[in-house]
Length: 374
Image (cartoon, rainbow, N blue to C red; front, side):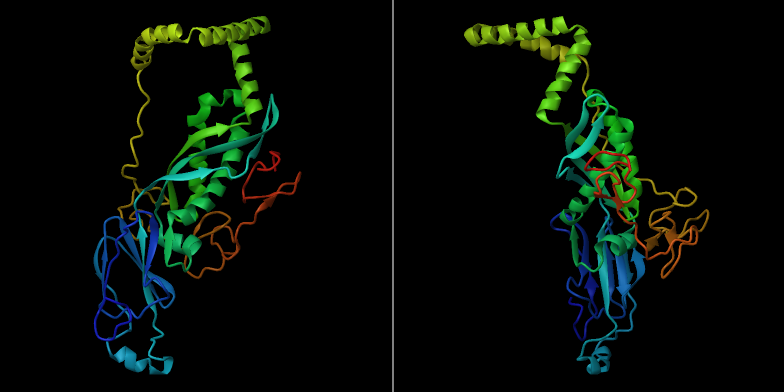
């Protein structure tokens, strides 16, 4: 039922047919004249944010809810004649998709600078995937969505990819000295990066469920130098390395001249090679997103799902805004942070690198352009 009809009450609900929408507002364009007694139906994987006269006045969990406004069928139209039959008591409902959005892409649009302790300045490219979930619907709307009627994963991927790349640069700068040790530290870097990003995304009402690094690729000539260095560490002798390369060249030539014979030999060797590999076990599978336990951001006590206040300390769980300086939850219309006194309206500023002048995200430790510590 439309939100601007004259006689009937509205039944408001929403289904995500695309599987990519984080938020959907009803009505999609502008706002409507939702009437007193309208019925709102929210699914298990959703949260409904009711916005009345420009302010979020309620967050609703799964179930059927009755909305209360000052719009009365027929009488509202008569009373709104001075406004061209359009009631000034505007209202809308924002449906927020609370499921885990998996397999979102991130990557370096341009190579980032990394100062290798052995190889010097290197330009790196990296990419991977991450899982994302909205955990604070009102904060998500106030900080990221604004007044958009539909907000999809495509809209958030581009911005979050920039944040991830900046924090990725800081992480490898602090926890990696040379790329020669990189292959064995993918999981460690991924875990550290996930922990660092959870705080950044928490300011937008988002939770980073998991981040995976698919690949970190240096230029081809650097990769060749790393491969040669790894072989030298295994062999421990330059003369032996040169002998090995010569043997590899002879083997390639022999393979080209006796392809069928070598192919038959490899065919006999493959079953044993596969049996040896499988006997070592397979890597553990990702347990999946699973259920996420909720805790109070102040006292860290367990909080029931959809609870508005913490049962232990009474802290409000529905976050409307956060301090850009210390992350303290702010009450609606607060002008200053009660913890650090920082102005509520002031946003964090980008940091300029003292070496090259490139602007980086607030809180960045290493410059994405030149790799220098800021």
